[in-house]
Length: 82
Length: 82
Length: 158
Length: 158
Image (cartoon, rainbow over all chains, first blue to last red; front, side, top):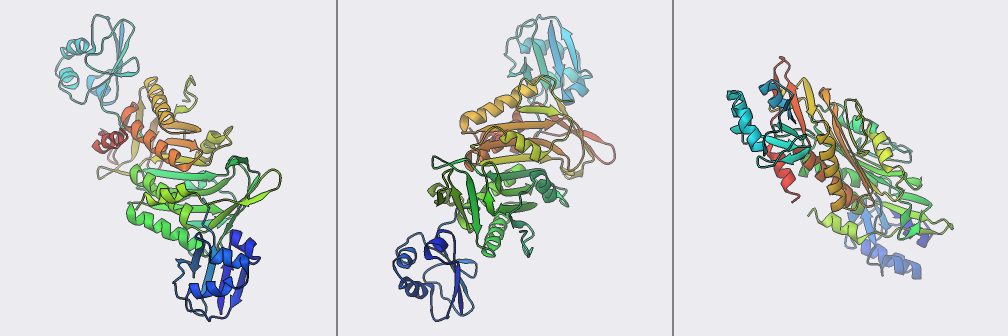
């Protein structure tokens, strides 16, 4: 399984903070393409969004980053702490 | 009269913290020349010393700075606070 | 909520406020050859984008945050000769004038501490997973936008 | 000995120690639109020029010191957009790890506060009439020499 986390505006927009999905995606991009099929909000937030930030297992990642069973994948907007 | 102040190593080397002198010097340089005649230590500290720092009335001054009655003239080494 | 696993003892993510003197004192404890301590404290401004702000809520990504902050801290120690450093970032609800974040750096000479504290803040702003949501006096809530100037500030260290 | 004439309320020359939190809080008081507070604290190092130091004694030029510090502070306010700033410098006898000096600067955004605090310290080091005398463990006393590096640090702001 994969753990998928959503933070901040993404969490609110997509209506969930986290979910578990089968580990059937080779890269983050494959996962994103699958999630985008859930509807307009998902497509906007995850595919048509230059500001999408990605982390895999707590490290900054990219669309081409490979993922495997047990990974934690997070999606969030640009950070604004400090 | 003039107030003359000596600080830090100058105070110790010249053996005094302050003194009053008649206001009979046109510039700091004239005052320095007169003080230097007091002996070797005075000459070394005040004339043959590239590091001599001068203040007139609490402002940084130079050998050519004019002085007048009532002025406070201070001599000291480079500062080392902070 | 104090960080339950202090894997990174120089990083603290918590709801509670902090005391600058105590933190500076702890930072210096056990390091005698320190001549300079630079601290940065970020506070809640009462105005943002021209609007009055009543409440600021800080969300973070537990686990990734600590790791990202520790990475930034270690980068600073690689670039400058430092004796100690510490980062505190609060989460949850805060109000105007509240302290949000602290970076404290101790070194032998001031130059290193100034640069390192500034570097850590610039990197924290663009690399640590925190998000701010502000509430206006009429109850309207909005997520704070990332600033281009923060990205520029970070890039100046490259 | 607290400065008897507070002509310059943002400058303090005194024998007493200071509390960083209190000073940072007072600095921010009455200024709501502050987002950044940078403080610098200089402390007595236990080693100087390779020798162990037991006591550090700070002498100053009363009157000129306050004026010189206020001038440096105002120069910082002219160069950067700052909300508030404060300088404390202790005099008299101090011991390793003691606090000697504090510069605190508050501004809306961090960049200005970092630069201004650094600038004030660099100028204070070469322009404020303080002199340090150190006592070694064997009782030997010596005046601390001015550092070329401090003069260079100041000149970088020109």
